[in-house]
Length: 603
Image (tube, rainbow, N blue to C red; front, side, top):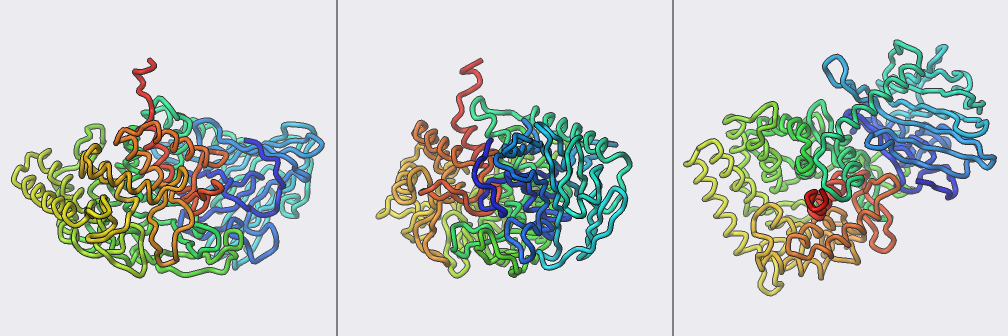
């Protein structure tokens, strides 16, 4: 993709590419600046934080490789990989190419995924001069690092962290940010404070070859739909990059505090594991025959089930099972100067009863899938039964709902729906083990919740299921009724609900979550996953061509490398909200799987 717009000093849009290795991630703008990177893991200190501004000098909180006088840039992913390639050109026709990645590959019988960024730079046209500015900051931008230098490296020390930049470029030029003639390739390895065992250029080249091979081999194993393959591959790699492989957790996004709409204060920290979002990620990757993520996630939710032991389960957790995620603010200007910048998320205190269904749904396929290396047994089922007991107890109790309302509790239909799903799946798993009495018990509970939802979640005057029992407002989450199997897609009640939601919440080819004002007023932008749920529902009820039109609109809203954030402005198509949003990338996969022609139609 080419960009000839003005090359400003700050990142003013979400035209960003992501690199990572299932330990951490970094975001790179079209000018090849790393503007966001938290270390030593997704929820760590953003040592590069220019995406959210800086209180220091211009250029602080970023890692830039500059071609002075740049007038044009191109950026893309190396096909079927998580390697980003950026090309910069100046007025005289000089050009450079920067390849960025986080190493990830098998070695010595294990996955090698260091907290390290590799940047390889080479001349591709003319006689370019480059300037390197590596300016990490610590403590959310409040602390300058202490810097020391060696013959081939720089060290950045502070806030309990030490980073080492090793390179075959002149350390003096890099330290002084002096422009120099790039007459041969140079490489930069930014990682832990450890010496490299070989020449930087040689080791970075080897790591790139191995990382490219890893991602292409991983992609080759995906079971893809016939159509929209490039979009699906990019979404799948992005979802994989949002997994914290060490524990099995899956982050909702890699950023904090990108507002849902301009100047709304709807700025949240999404660098944690929402059990709801994680279920949808697992389900989407399962649909592509990528099972490893589910296996890893099962370890994570088994820990949560054993920790909670039948008591309340909070809707989100830290990626290493942290329970307390106290929400505070830090002194950064914010995205486009739209603060506040939040750390932590108050939703960990919420009661959101759909979480019990999300846990069971996230694990249920494992009990039927013979491909898994570690087949779950009766003890795993019994652990889930404890979650199911809680689901049954909470199915008709008020909660904050999946939209995490902070000042209002209701009996949300969508929460009850997921409690039903928990009991329904437990009945099916029990039958798989031949436990007929327990299966009958869970089926009776599922039937009881089913009858309750039909009686209290349906509103005759509205002619649809509504967002809360005895309520009257519409809610996009009710589009999941067919997806989780509560009603057949052609059931008149589901069809009517889809139609009423479209009439009320659709704006052009985008869908809002709800229309009623919440804690921050009426929503201003569409929520991407809701649009994808609507696409799925339309296809299920037979309006497939309309669904395809909306789906292709959503594909056109992706950025230049195929990524989506949480929200989209229906008026402008501009992306808002945290980035890249796993929910949105899930929608790309689900939509393609639902809408694509079959392989046998072509071959």
